[in-house]
Each structure stands twice: as C-alpha cells, then as structure tokens.
Image 1 (cartoon, rainbow over the protein chains, first blue to last red):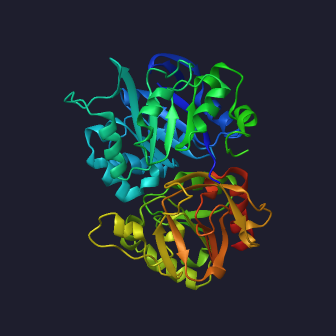
Image 2: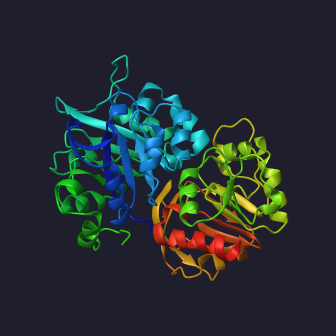
Image 3: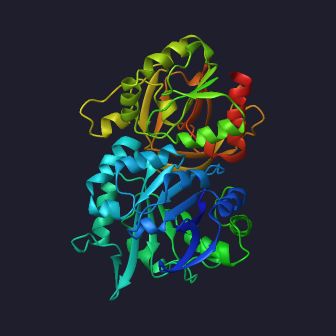
Length: 249
Length: 208
C-alpha cells in the first residue's frame, strides 16, 4: 500500500535555516547542510525546502548553494518559494529536486500550471496554497498583484482541473504555533479535493500527525518546529503511530 | 563508462551525486566527443512528460544513439519516464493537448496508460511496496521492499513475461521489466535510500 509521508520542512533565509511563526519573526535555528544530513538518516519520507526570501520577493537562493546543500541527500526532495517560470523549474529538477511547489507564481499566472505540467508531468508540479482565516472565512493568503481576491474553493477546483500533481495546504494562522493542524480548514475543503493533499502548519505533538494522517485524502504531513524544538524525530513519530497509520518503517 | 541521458527535464543532479559516490565513470549525453565504443551501460533518468521527452531525445539525436547501443547489447536502465519512453505510445501525449503526439523508442510492445485503478491514488507519489520476481537487478533486495514512486502513467506490457515486479496492491501497475539487455523501473531508485542504491549497484556492477 502507498505509505503516508512524514515530511520535515526546512525554511531558508539568508542561506540559514530559520523557523517562523505565521511566516513571520524569523529565528535562526542552525546550519542547513547539517540538518539535511540529519533528516536524511532519520527515516524522513521526503524533505521540503522553502526559500523564504524568494517567497517574500527578496531575491532567490543561489542555485550552486542549493546544489551543494542537497548533494548528500538521497531522499525525495521538494522545493518552493518564489518559483514562477518554466526555466526555473527545469533548473531545480536538473540539480536533483523531484518536485517543485508553486504558489504565488500560479496565482499570478494560472496558465503556468498547464505549461509546466505539459513539460515536466503533473507528478512533479505541486501547488502551494497558504490560507488565513479572515473575519470568520477561510481565504487565500497571497494576493494577486492587482489585489483581487480569489475564492479558495474556486481556486482548488480550478487547479485540479489543470491537472496539478499534489496540493500543499498551509494554514498560516497555525504555522510555527505548534497548536495542532487546522482541522476546521481541512473539513471545509475536504469534499472538493480530488488530488493527493499534504497538510502543513501547526504540528506540535505526535498525536497531531496521527489525527491528520488518518484522513484518507491526506497523503503527507509536513512539520518543522516539532523536529527542531523537541526531541521528537520522524523515526519516533513512526514508532508511535505505525499501528494507526500506514507508514514506511 | 556509463552514458547518462540528459533529457532536459530529469533530476540529473541526483544521479551525478550517486554515480560519483559509487566511484563510477560516466559521461553526460550532451558532452562533446564521447566515444560510442567506450559505453558499457546507459541510464535514462526519469521526470518529464512523455511527449516532451520524446521531442527532446529526437532533437538531440539521442533516440538513434540509444537504439544503436541497445541493439549492440549494451545494458539499458530506464527510470520512470525513461521506462515509459521504451514504448511506442503514451496516453500522456494524447492527454496533454499537444498538437502532435510523439512516439517513443518502440523497443517494448504495449502502451503507456493513465492510472485509473480504483485503489491507486493518482499521481501515485510516495513509498510503496512491490512484489519482486527473481532478477539480477533485484539481487539481495528483499521481496516487498518499499520504493519511491512519482508518476501518473504506467506501462501496460503486451508480453507479461518481461515483468519483474509489480505493486503488491495492484498487479496491473508494473514497477519493473527486463527484456534481454533492457532493464527499466517505474520507481526512483536514486531516491529510495538503501534498496535503491543496491539496485543501482546491481545494474552498474553486475549487469554492465
């Protein structure tokens, strides 16, 4: 059976590993190369790297630096943050990434979904959707340049029709807060989902992984703070929840 | 020397790192002046839309070089779309709104189909366990091992005898084949940790 995935997320800013709260107040937590080496050993199923500066529109990680940090890694790798062209996707896959996560790039230019899927195949193209709760309603966090609001459910339906591979859903309100994933958000969108979905934001205890991964359509759980601020590792998570969730152990 | 095919859409860097680690000599297909006579094996890494990969290998004249080497009995290892490209046709070309669906290498009979099996999530992305038949490529790899998959299409072979492994869950989803000197896997050994490295070693050290 296809296993559910435990996916550590590594946020990079100024070539350093950082941790954020609600994608703000960056705190430097260590050396990125060292962390990747550690996660490569601790039974992670995949690693996700986010170029935080690029996602904030402040310049991108140098490609040779990225190449260096993943050179020791034999795990599946995804990268996101500020990606908005086919050439960039090509370059990132070429240095060894397996999937790219595109967020604002697709919002700004929805045609890019089809253009990238046609070249690289849908399995390599993940759409990232960041969500906040605003006056009681779930909304897409990123805006288009013209500030136009896009309805979350309409957007989810649209990107699935465009044959995107997976959907990475982040609740910005929960990100870095370690207060559990946003289960209300998942309930709100669940019936519209027909692609594999990965959930990010809020994981603080082992039980959180279990609670989210027992949902049929959720194929992976992303987490960051829990692996840096506690003794918990992907390995220990798996040992604890393997009876309830189908995992690679 | 291993010939590493550069199809422009693959995760080539991952292969370069592994081949270096295994201290193997290799040459990239876009490097100048490589000698056909020095090639002892071909690796065709995955990632890419079937149609785009078919277009690229034609554009760089790689299709003819691969066919020439395979006919000279040089071992071939195809990964993911590097497996699918061995077939003549793929539904991916037909479904991607390309004006002209392009053909693959036509070395294996059958067709590449979209995953529509009820019990398989599509894209089939993640770790899954496979049922393995005895084959040199899988030497010292346990039956039911987990490998990393990332695909939406699969190879439907006409000759079922060439199938060397399938998903345990669904035997329609072929995970590897072997026809004479042609070996191919649907999963990504370069991303499958220990068992994946073992498989690559089997290919380059025992088969090539």
